[in-house]
Length: 145
Image 1 (cartoon, rainbow, N blue to C red):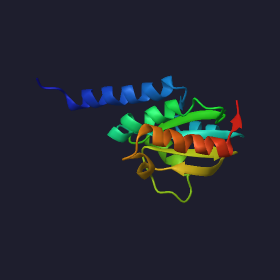
Image 2 (cartoon, rainbow, N blue to C red):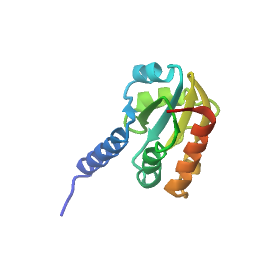
Image 3 (cartoon, helix red, strand yellow):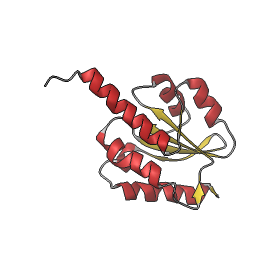
Image 4 (cartoon, rainbow, N blue to C red):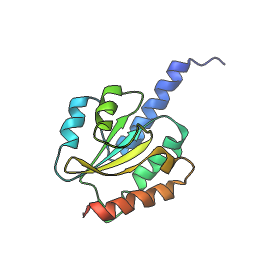
């Protein structure tokens, strides 16, 4: 059986996009969409999505399950590293002091970065460890819904 690699990867990317959107995150695919979302008042959680194993096995499940909490960000958005390159680059421009990292999470308040969960905080950890890190950030920076 000979499978076309590009066809396979397109399927992987589509599934990765669908998972995070189904969890309630708005996909941002252009720099303009990123600016519009990240400059809003309130709290915004940005999930930098990717196709790596720790994104699918840890980060996306954590992104979904972390929302079962009394305090949550006002808006949930995602950019896709390696796919929507300009949007991802624009989002990362808000993450001052942090090198590019995917998957990762950034929590912004009123357009300013307040905390970051980088790949090294995700890879090698269980999904529930990352859920706890996200919920700790929600507790500190978000309002009860």
